[in-house]
Image (cartoon, rainbow, N blue to C red; front, side):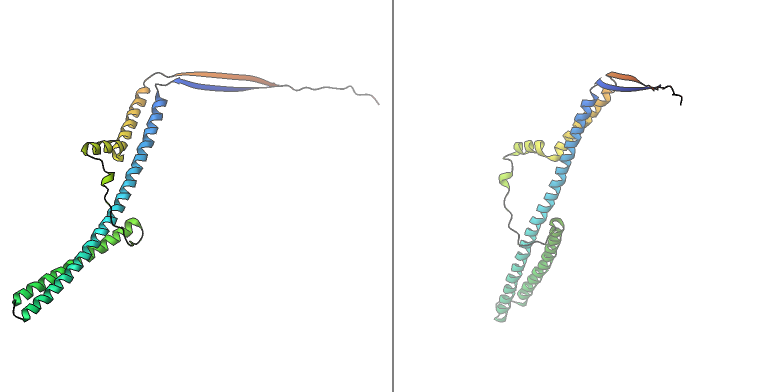
Length: 210
């Protein structure tokens, strides 16, 4: 006979200073804080895209304005020269008109450099070449009515504020977990065991003489 045994032991914690519940709430707060951090990143990307879009619209309009200004200055220079030819103005007037035209052309070159930089930024942020851009539209209808409403919306929905709130809650739960470790722990344990034995059976038959 070979003795053997089979046993099962189960342990159930009944009280551990609420550490399990506090750890669960801490994990939930950390998940919510991570989601709000993702919202911060999303808003940063969106703001970069909107800024690149509006800057390109602005610089395109400025470049067009400077080019039109040069056309006006060219016409003024032509008229000044015609008046000089008939004796109405002096050479100083012609020189001043030419100086204004040179300054206008310099401003066109500066505006072109700024416009090309905005195009490069747009390509970097958006990922495609800028086509024909639609003009911007006012966003006043999306804004709160007054300062108090703005503060209320920011406090409730700003991801930087909500991230800080969830992080604070996670830290408070961590403190409660540490406090719970000082409390006694109550658990119940059950044990079931059964002994088994292997039995060998044998039988003999008398031999018959031949």
